[in-house]
Image (cartoon, rainbow, N blue to C red; front, side):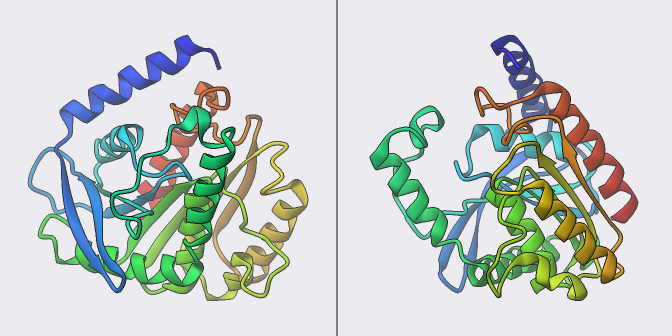
Length: 264
């Protein structure tokens, strides 16, 4: 989509950000203190809660605004700093993060440190935090994520099955790999509803990967959807210049409203 569509969407998200209560807090994990942003609906609650995992660029104003839009649908939404183990790091500039060799190396090194084991211990801490909040209802939660956050959302559903009621992934990569810890192999342990929206022509999640994941979830009896949007990797995050697709973005919001509304 062009700059006009991106600007319109950013303005719309900022309106949500101003209208929904948003605060920062800290969650203590086994590895330290993780800064989080929490967006809540206007009112007293309690409401169901969702953990929203950002893409490889990490937490930033776009995700604060996306959390606020999610909160407007009636959810407490937690966005974690996925790179909190690197306290004091310089934020990534998305236009150069993948093109500048030094920044690309820094980004990929930090991404590699977000292992499945760390995803799991972090998520347990986030869920514990949400569960003790008086404005949160229930003991099972939703997860959603973008790019590497989509992989995290799906991974957590297989590793903390008793805590996750619904897991969604948007243009997530690495859901199916050749490794013994491939996220799709955990399908038999997943009681959650699963929704995966992939990007077309995405080397990190191919059409063949989609068939494999769909088959694994079907064989395990998981209520699920695996589908491909006619858009590029990064289609749902407005500050992903060149990849953002307004039509696909709105489709993703409709899917979240529908799936979370039914499962939570």
